[in-house]
Length: 331
Image 1 (cartoon, helix red, strand yellow):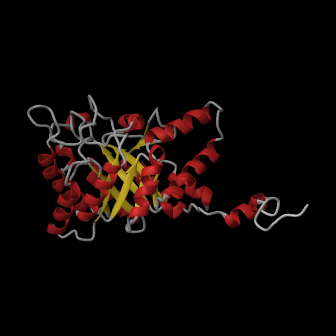
Image 2 (cartoon, rainbow, N blue to C red):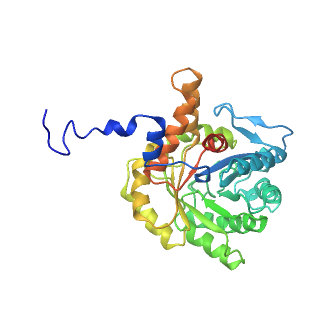
Image 3 (cartoon, rainbow, N blue to C red):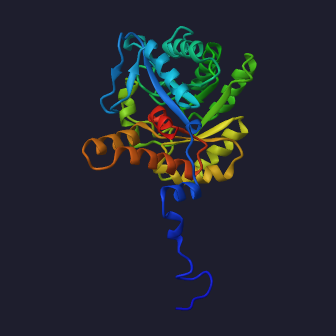
């Protein structure tokens, strides 16, 4: 049978899929342990780790087990750890003052991890009030019960300073307040912390997939966060947020959640010349773990497939609760 060059059967893409070695050689997207960042929760006042029932395999750490988790992540080749503090319930109040207490659980945890791993692991911290407020919102409330944007920015500036004083390398403002990156950048610079980076939660959507996270941080939230987190229906809004964050001094930008917003991640990755992160959130983790526990999917393959899809869409860094496990597998 005669054929012309470039048409069937002369062109057979399957030739490049014939063996694991061949597929590995021609792979267009490669995961590396250094792409991964481990989110970790540390809880005040506990003597042993507390399992998070909706996130099998993930715990609220004690200070000691957090140190161990940081060392394990470092040894696996993970690049960073993102810390979330869970205060004792009695320490929550309307202003989230535990979040700006130099001896609050998050600041103590930053110092613990810094003492354990130094600068060998990038230490990141969640810069938000929701874990520390008795109402569970990401900011302070006005007389009508709405989150007061500008009053919240003042609290964020304080948080940035105490987290930087504790030794954090990167702050991650996640509250989606207008102007938060600029205020935090100014606060850091004015207090001698010019080298602390800002990872902007640029596109953070009001997602149903945050459910398990509420348990992880002991959230007191009543209602929702739709007045400040983004509408899942919108794309242009993310690009506007991106422009604002970059203008305000963001060093890195992030999309959260990851899998439901791969299109947003790809658009942002194509548009910027700064590193781009994506956060594979609690609900994404829980879905895979639950399906695997029921025997419906191959757990290990699903984990690596989801991570590859996020990397393929343009993420330079992936926050994932599987970070240490996946890094070990990649090595």
